[in-house]
Image (tube, rainbow, N blue to C red; front, side):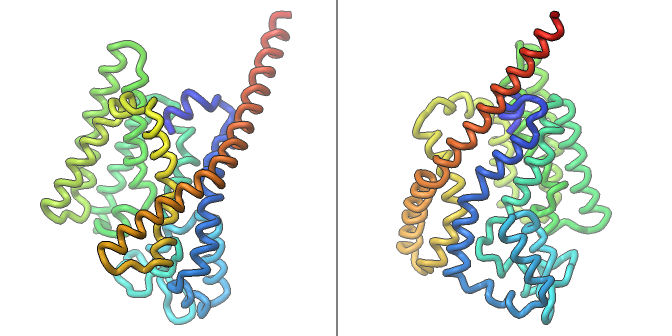
Length: 315
């Protein structure tokens, strides 16, 4: 997103950027959602809730935004109730979602909404936002004892540091001049320490947590180099394009196949890959073509406006 916002979308194109990102996510999600409502059964108890609860559930299902709140809400008799630790309740709203992984899309959309105001302002502003997010996470942990799910991975302000870590990778790879590149790399390495420390303080569970943090640190460090090595590989790009439809459709395939053995699980994985290829070919490619045409028309209009402004100024 840092690369896209700094090198593709000019200033003043905020709504074009937001709408294009939503168009990237929403059409495939909506098709999966409709099919999931048809084959899944876990959402049926929602029908017994009051009108406001049902409306909230349906609206958040359709528009994605708000699904991260499912980890703070639970069904209590005929209504939804709020709890700071709803994960401890057996009727947490998340269990009734027909596309359970979609809550991550809500966090992604929130990042799109704020990213243009942060990632264009350089590594210092990005670094400051990361530090603020980490401090918030630590405050929630030490000040309020919110050190476990859902506060550790569902609350967007404290998750913002992870989103922005990749932006530092962009500045490290796109820096002009050796001195600027070294400063960006040094800042990235320095910020990895508090980032990993903040994550380590949340729900520590021994060696598995240590290994996951080690892998995360390696990924953050290696992102710029990995991007340089793979950016022009066609099959790698194609796999990247399949990542979203595969991610969003695999639960749908699971609802249909209900795999209970290792063999059936791999069969579901293969079927999910085929379905994701179909979504990419017949849903995402046509929409992406339209998205790019919208961007091109806007870019041409912006260039004409700048040219006219330059001509007016010279005369």
